[in-house]
Image (cartoon, rainbow, N blue to C red; front, top):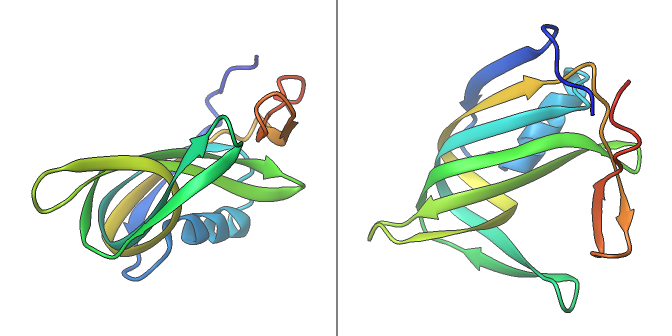
Length: 145
């Protein structure tokens, strides 16, 4: 595996109110030609759609929440899938009663938030279908440019 070098770029800014986190970050990555990166985000959401991957059925169980949440932690990465920028993100959220839920982030509606993208320009990670898990995973043979 190739390590990141000093050419790494960092982007930090606010998430627009009403934005979908994954869509916003994908559009930002495309506009800035970011193909491989690590990302973090925090803030609060007006609504969200989360998923849990069922390893037996090999399908995501999705659940929509139409209530405010704090983003305790948002993390993910940017890579390529089928030749296009792909955002893979997970969140841990807390509600007004300080109860915590989390999962794979599908859709969201931002109330307020901030993000950090750590671009890794010397790496090129591509996702390919893995028949063992049923997921699109990074191919370890394709990690350096």
